[in-house]
Length: 493
Image (cartoon, rainbow, N blue to C red; front, side, top):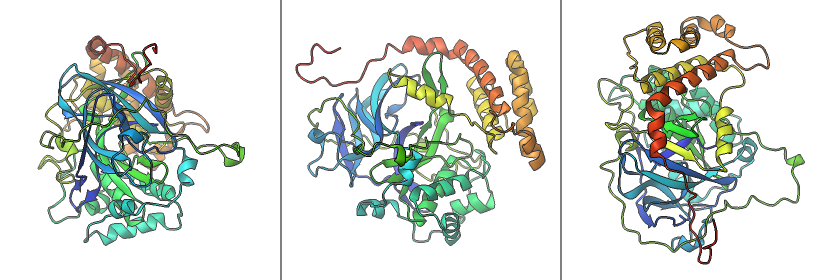
């Protein structure tokens, strides 16, 4: 279910920006197991990250990172209400730690690679619907924080959306669904200095980008009594089945919401309309589950290692602007829109066997099986991103059909598919409800528009591999399993 590469998490909102207030630090040697919480319904996922541009010292990975083949310098805080997966490396208080930001001890450059193991969630809808609400007091104190002058209007909206709902999961889905009806626009002007950013997003301009969606959802959940926070990093990028790689660029920089569920930990939600929905498996009916089965076992991990020293990590000076939380909702100035880093990050993530099959399945099944209201916009936005990746700038002074002509001229074989996606977008945005209904498929069928996108994306990948594919594969050596061997294991593979 993992679909994010996390860089930093934020716990405190001051009415204008998000802050990470964690003041603990820890250092772990290469291969050492981090004493992260042993949440239920987690599975070990290995990742190999190959960099095609310098990124400073920041390590990006699926939540929750539990091991790396490079030295880790981390910003951490204790995680109450759980036990660590590694007692040998746990702090003196015995509590597990959670990373709020991870760095290594040297700069990472073009061609460098590192390996991570993450304890990724496999929680189902049924798991989360039935989760306890027995929160540790520290969780409530930190993740129900709201500014003293928080908007009464937004509070009333949150109460309206969650009225009658009895579980945190139901409340989260209600708010997430509401926010996904707001049009996505990453070129909006910054709010006036005296405006509340969330009110500006919800009621004034009624459009925005990921920072607005995530902030609105996290704060609406908090006033509804559900512990929540925001996280920044990168969305999953684009998966190439032929090479087995994810390609992640600076266009995939993203902010999302994480909601705390006791026993299951922090679970991601996706309120941004410009991103595909985050759908989790429904889960088994309890009446069909073996009554003798016990609780889920902790995520299997390599052997424990001794704890390392804990000098402070590097400062935040070189953290890219979109991950600092500084004036998160103020925009970059007169131009508006999210801050774009001066460097362009391109990560090639090679998924290690045997877990690659799981993630390939998730990507294949990530498309909608029925028509959804935001599908034309979602696919048009993806087509624009592909245009930029292929070196075809998307100009704001050009119409959708002018964009289509430019892309079709560069990729003649894709011309009819590009036209179909553009037509659906124009009809959705400008044709009214009657035109939108015409885009829907027959009952039970896959949306024709999604079928069109599958064909178009295959052509995009064909062109992408001409430009980047060989270079990436040359730079990515055969992956190795990240494992710390115990004494006496010399004969192990």
